[in-house]
Amino acid sequence: MSKQKLKAISGKLKKASKAHANQAKQIDGMLKKTSPALAKISASCKAQAKKKFKVWPSAYASGWGVRCTRGDFKKKK
Image 1 (cartoon, rainbow, N blue to C red):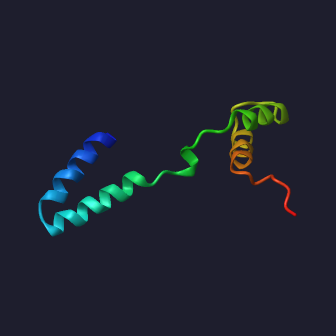
Image 2: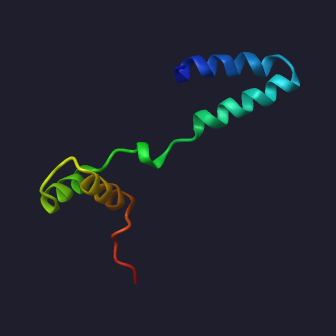
């Protein structure tokens, strides 16, 4: 189902009864959650990964790009 359909269903459930309102809250919670894995790799990190690894896309290169985007490689003080 698309997000728009789920939002419409959630709105109708909220207007129904308390039991259905709880279902609507669960649907809204699922819609708000976004996986960090779905976030795009930043352009600079993607370019660095392409320079570092011979093959793009590969599991190693894209994994490195994701960690770079998250900031796992920043120097710690």
